[in-house]
Length: 331
Length: 287
Ligand SMILES: Nc1ncnc2c1ncn2[C@@H]1O[C@H](COP(=O)(O)OP(=O)(O)OP(=O)(O)O)[C@@H](O)[C@H]1O
Ligand SMILES: [Mg+2]
Image (cartoon, rainbow over all chains, first blue to last red; front, side, top):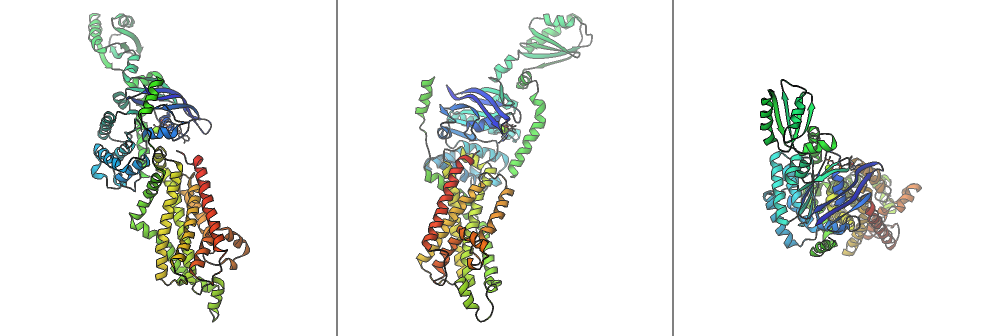
């Protein structure tokens, strides 16, 4: 059952900046679907279009069967949004912020009061509810945004980098809440992130996006499997030209590449192959000096399809994200 | 597949908020910042009170236009329509209070946009009309409440009201209501595309003083140069003040136009400005 259907969606800014360039995908009911990509890839722009905040310059999408172009009010009534920035009103209390949104969704007061208490409990803000949001820490504000996004019990929840700028501990906590909420309210989640681990552990399926285009879609496991297996890297002290042939002919080896004096061996399962390879090499009197095994990771998937490593970028890019977050909070 | 889709649609009843509740909640969100922090309430009263005390009492601007001789009162009466310049100015300051409050209230949408608050409420199933009217309502309520306080302070400081009945006070406040309604629409409109506070301050500086000085807030039109007279006679602020003075100060005050015509003009200004803002907001108020 496709709860979100996106068809050739595009957004061109200022006539020439193709922020989102014809993306198409489906999200199934109950899924956690992730958009994974570097800064400026077009993740937020896609979410803004899907949540009817900006209108697409091309294509369309259906959420619960409602077109984001033609049935925007129905779409809005059916979704929850947790934006990338902190958008709660700092001058009001956490409670007043949620209450306002409850009013804007037309939730009857008695129902709203019960829900607000329940949500505040869930995100552990009950004690801070009567304090002004300006006094909240980053993690508290993130959790408040979550509670606000959930006030209408949306069947579809959009989360734009919900853990941006949080420390590892808070990140884990936030994800625990999100998973709890998803179970409890049986929601479909559409999220963006640039944390590879996050996408890997949480998402049922992910789309790799770069320069506004979807490069690859699939379950993290499937994407990794498509890489063709694990990678064993080894070097020997007494290298000979015929070694490559020997490795290639070994049972279980799929591909051998020699980079410098290191052999990169692709294998279905590195755990079972490695001992066999060592035995084989010592029987042929080769001295193994270095050996490592790598499981396929999303980083390698990313590397395979974009030709660049996300992890390499990530240092710079986390710092950037952090800066932006600080600016957002300072404002 | 299509069958299943229509099933979800039917299962979930789409729920929309009531227009009045959504609008009031948005207005109340802004009002809370004001009535929950007395400091802001007091600070916003300070400027008109200072001006009233400074221009009306200390300098007595009115005396500058009349000679300080024995004929002073007669001359004052002829020019201002009252022998108390302080009382004359007080009504100008009530209007000043109304427009500066409307300006701040209307412009606050710039901050809401910057903080992403507008984005947040634009993804809720409310209409843009709610957002605009909520902003206007906030300004109008603040302006009128502060005008009540200012009027009381002015009376305590020695303002003399020739007519002091419920009707005359209500008439003056009805004019202030229409003025602040129109002005907050105007400033919401000006703020719709502004992204930063610099451009906001520029608009405020560019408009605030001209709106006030090109009106009858300080002096009557009769002693203005003719070009200023022309501007002032189009300025809605002049008509709100004229209604207030003729309602409260007495028969020797010569209004700009009959109160009926002044109300008509202010009404057209308020309704017209709001209509323009609401129509343009459909295109301009975006994420
Ligand atoms: N309102 C706008 N006007 C012009 N260009 C824009 C606008 N919004 C986004 N862009 C551009 O569109 C591109 C995609 O931006 P987007 O915010 O969607 O990236 P993102 O994937 O969310 O990145 P990040 O990880 O930094 O949040 C960027 O090049 C950005 O500069
Ligand atoms: Mg983004």
